[in-house]
Image 1: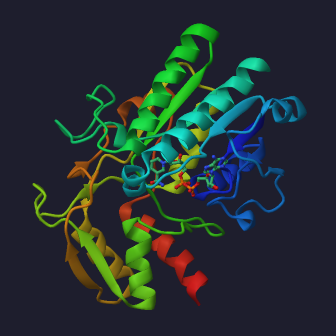
Image 2: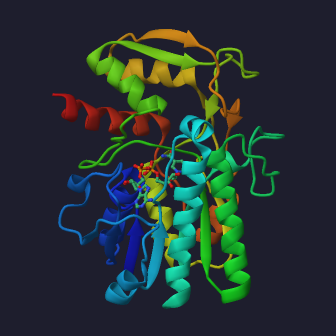
Length: 314
Ligand SMILES: NC(=O)c1ccc[n+]([C@@H]2O[C@H](COP(=O)([O-])OP(=O)(O)OC[C@H]3O[C@@H](n4cnc5c(N)ncnc54)[C@H](O)[C@@H]3O)[C@@H](O)[C@H]2O)c1
């Protein structure tokens, strides 16, 4: 299948391009390279263009048989400072993409959604029926796009799968997490282990067993394989992608210390705006509907991330 991958030069997008190739598909990357890396998509066709441009000519040129939509702005904190940029880029970008599909051919559409659409958990683990009350503009853009997809399904018959990721982490042999700036805990903790420096813990007074925030970490290759499965199973799907087990910030730090053999210097900071206390997935629906299983343990997630970062810093 010819698959247009928006944001394909980013962290999850580039891993998914590799999974698509391995499954015999043909990825075509659309990425502005605002945050993505050309090195991560070597040998693949790249259209360096912003989503909000007129994309109809690109659809007529490549005639994609499916679209996987990763591209977007992803910083929760920044979205509270400059919300208009997030609505413009994320919602405006999705509208531009969907309009091009509407004007050319209706094809299956897989969308990167997020557990940030749920807000503070009223129960845990979170299933897909949990109320949607995002705490940030970032989360609201993703929830809006999901609702736009439901309307496009009803009115145009768009087959779609909105995949609500919990925390992506880990690396493959060739690719890893390379965000600038980096805000995610595992790469920051590994960087502190490899290069020294303080690691900030945002919030130590959450209502969790050790007071630090709890998250469900899923390996990026497990996310990638879910996208490949979703391509042929799109049908008004909205599913969680997580492992179903939460780890606190302190637990992750201990695991990074164990893998690296280094003691990390930590500093306690106030909670970050928009960060819920705990986000753990119930992914039973995704397992059933996508015929998918996450394979990596938290130890393997941290080990693969550590190996990749060690090569970058050496
Ligand atoms: N990383 C996570 O833990 C996580 C969790 C939940 C959801 N998500 C979602 O998954 C997707 C991918 O996340 P990631 O961590 O790989 O992010 P990333 O920043 O590495 O990748 C996003 C890519 O989109 C491109 N992009 C951004 N705006 C664009 C635009 N207007 N036009 C064209 N290209 C544009 C960037 O250049 C980048 O390559 C995002 O939509 C994110 O919201 C990520």
